[in-house]
Image: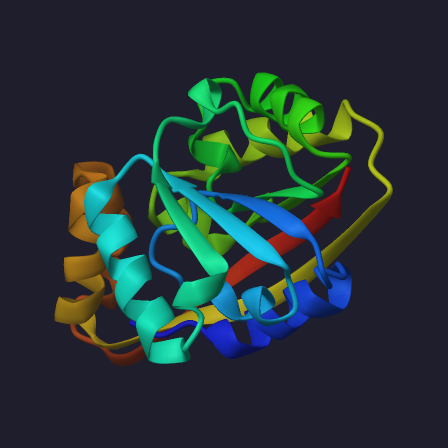
Length: 198
């Protein structure tokens, strides 16, 4: 699977200036968008999944950014950190109560940046996250949004087997939704994503 993470990271950097800021990065595991760390003063990378944090550490070592990041295994609702910005990296839609998470984030930092799937994204539909995405952006809209931008990329897969490997953990509904690609190769599924500054 390959989304254009390089372009996504550039979009993030053009949307918000991380220069010399302490950033609380929520859902930071994986590290595919970690380039913003080059200009930030410090990143407090929070994820509850130890495997995701391990993958983040490996990516940071590869990028030469490990010295900028402090990895924290925790649930966001238990954090008592302070920073200049909270960044939700493709995770707000996974929060049990997105509005409460946003309000909590505003208590931790003056700026909150949401980087997540956009409503109506075909990829969010494929992985059965369309309702969670809708709810999370509805929560964003209830707060004073200073800026919002929408973008489009694609999720690419060599063949149906690679797509199935990615989607299988999302359950039987997701597996059913990708059935139309069963005999195809070079699969490209559009993925809309949005950035909001609160």
